[in-house]
Length: 221
Ligand code: SAH
Image 1 (cartoon, rainbow, N blue to C red):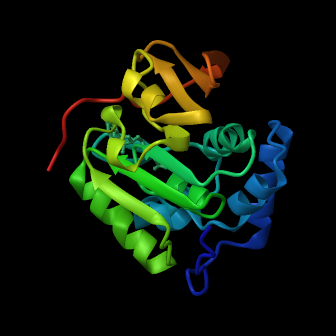
Image 2: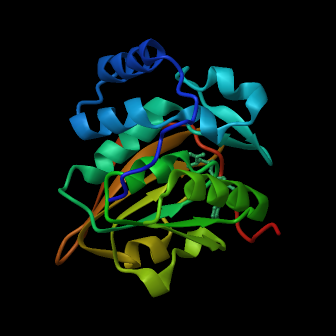
């Protein structure tokens, strides 16, 4: 777990952040550690300056390349689902994007391996991890639909982009006892899905409706 350096980052008022956390509680987020990390992680650092003033609203916000920083509720919910099976050592994230979800995870698990297909987004996120001192984050520029086989198996996998079906490779790279949290569907309708791997089977549970950008194949340099 990384203890991050949030000093001197121009924190928005405590009241604004407390209000956001209150809203997350009201929406059913109950993991205290997750709520605490959501309260202290400066979401405005993950946005362009022109949008930073909206960072503590519970909305998804654009980060360029037609991609979005997920809504705080979504980040909190996925993180809570991922952690519900106990402490995690190795976590794979598909879709680094702004790096906000990555930064939340970096404070709650031992190591985060994050794959992003759009190079300029990855580079921006890399700089943020450097500034914050997130040393347990490892990045790869690739199509994350194939996971990161060399670093697996993972005891948690999270995808912040939606494929139409559960990618086989991700299930394969899940350790026994591991959990995969992933939105599944097209641009009409998606379901946030939990996949649990046991000794002898794979259990899939639909959690709630979801609204994510699509998981795309190939990479952008
Ligand atoms: N977790 C991010 C959300 C970004 S939106 C955040 O907190 O900001 C989803 C991200 O998934 C985008 O950056 C998009 O480029 C990326 N993505 C889509 N398909 C991908 C793929 N096949 N491999 C890796 N990243 C992918």
